[in-house]
Length: 140
Length: 164
Image 1 (cartoon, chains in turn cyan, orange):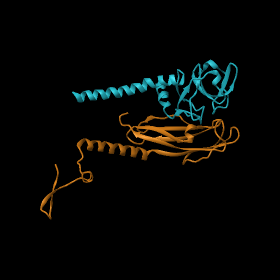
Image 2: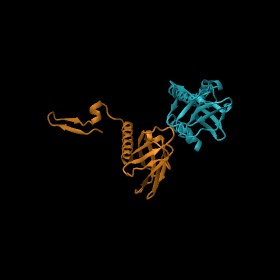
Image 3: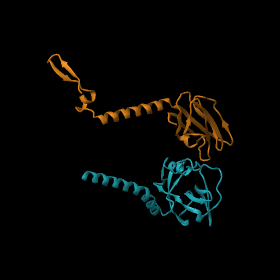
Image 4: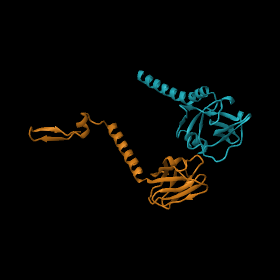
């Protein structure tokens, strides 16, 4: 009886840890990074070699005043989200460009900017290949 | 049951011990033997698949200018030649399954060239007698460095998949 209870307790602890990671981590990141979209998968090579296809990057919420040239920002567009580098900051809009692209994107309104990539020691925090899970799931 | 061997000097039976028992002083339990066999089979399977994989060296060089492409016609490796920014080059690898077992084909790309390389088809089943052309395309983006050489390795794994 005692042994069975111990096994049940172990299972409950493991389930708790997994649930905590699956549901708690995104919420924690949302709170910590001040954005409803704290993680993003890189689906194209437009930011190569800084970001690679399949990378998982972390996004932090920023205000208009915090943005500066060279930041890698995420912005909303009708077909989804784009992650490109800021090349020009205007009064009402900003202009971005993918590092690997030859042309700049159309001007983006500040309210469409979700945030910028979270940096650790001056480098974009990214987890290689982990974004492929999201990409695979969205294709199914 | 242990075998009995007669020791001719002492005229007493001597128990025959296996290598594991001699080393550790303990006999292997049944579940340990089963696990050992499973691991051995898995290891041999992975070893065979790795050995059987087609392996290619891949490389491309970035040259100055616009719309310039220089192709090196070699079949030994995936050499995409010299490309200027904004140009692309393609190479084809033909694979066929001449065995009686369907094969799951998976292509793995490694190295600095892998971020530049696209593949028309990956992770698919190749049935008995079937042939497939894999087209590898390299596009030279604006962020590439002129004069650089990007290299890597391409592995085409063929994993037996008899139940597909």
